[in-house]
Length: 221
Image 1 (cartoon, helix red, strand yellow):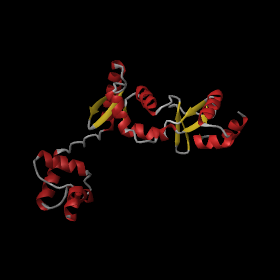
Image 2: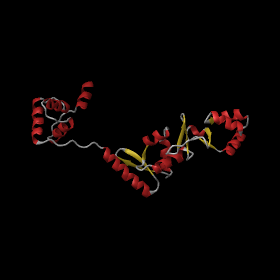
Image 3: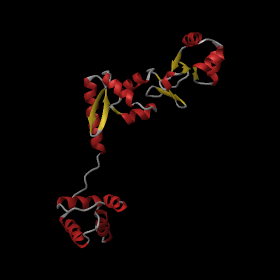
Image 4: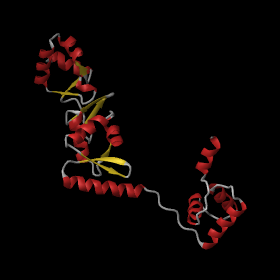
């Protein structure tokens, strides 16, 4: 036991080969010693890394990383993802979960959905993973939709009649100008008009006009 604790005093994590060499024991005997000391296996790297139970300092999400190796209070990656999804107020997307656990999780999430351990809904071009409990999932879904609504850009304020006329006159004078160029021309004259307001005005009057981005793409062809 002393040799085991001595290893972990210097190295916070270990693979099985490290422990076999250090202790001079067989695999079965190493696990007996680990069991007496109390140990955890990593949720990453197929669980092949070990540490003593008292070493990790878990964060608020129940995770601890030693370099690129992750350990979880939930044990396995599957259980960890279920717990993270259940505790997420607005559910979780694949990218959000992947950022937290620092692993590719697509296949594991698909397996969890298939097993009914987490739910999944398609919300505004995103798959959102939800808790299994219907009431929790309903609240998460509502929170996610509210979050996405807050993140949408506000529509541009409509122009007054005088500015609309200025935009239309500029289009007549510069029929090949982009919306951004028209906005710049008007701003140069002291008329505060944004690109988006020009685009909205042109769309309202069904006038086809390239944005600065689309014109740039066209010029590269």
